[in-house]
Length: 297
Image 1 (cartoon, helix red, strand yellow):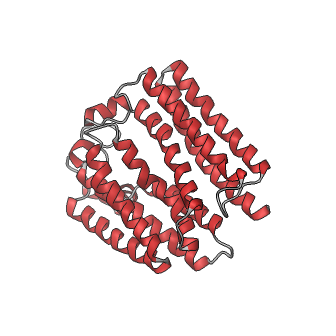
Image 2 (cartoon, helix red, strand yellow):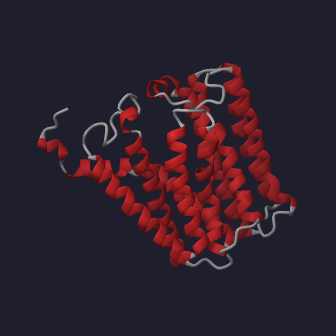
Image 3 (tube, rainbow, N blue to C red):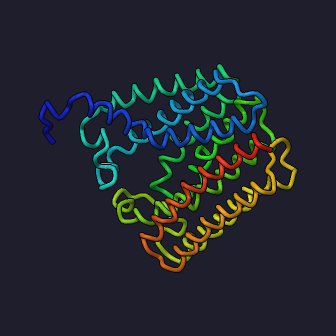
């Protein structure tokens, strides 16, 4: 794959950097952790908020860069990923490894300046994503279960950054984002099924686009919906939700459930894509409702 020199201008370096760290995904993760911080804090400290944003970004960027180094040969087989910097030959493994390593160090050090627990959870997240989730993806659909752990850490991480305490509140935030990831990932696994198969990835719980997968998607969507309204009942410590907010959150959950049921009925890639989009809207809006509710309650 020969590139003319002019096509390797600065914009391509910037876009490759954005792609190796998966910038859009990383920013959505930072959004989760900032929401968790706002929920946990009594008085917003903008220095901590900024540290959390940068530390969180470096943490996710590192995980994504390591992931792309490990999967470079498989990425080359899939239409979705063959244009990534390493398989496309625009970035060497060494460069990617340096970025990943520097990001890991920066991420952990920055989070450590907030408090030790935040740094510890950040480090656990990178380790699980890189060393357990990534290798398991080609072995078993249970990889999604493992991947849901680092994926659920950010929302909780924000609370831990705010309070230096891990209890029922961050545990609830973790559970919400943990259960949410199953319908989200399975929807992606469904509409990218053929592409994933080329790379040998097993993302769907039954390994197939069948009723079994669709039923499990509905079940986990219901779990997500139930966990998201738990704070209204008053036994999640300082994490509380007003009745109005709980109704909002419940309606958002019903919206996501509607698309999960549609996937069961239609069994199409289009329905899976709609569920994926609904799941992204759901988690973002739920976090916004939680935060607004806390500050106006």
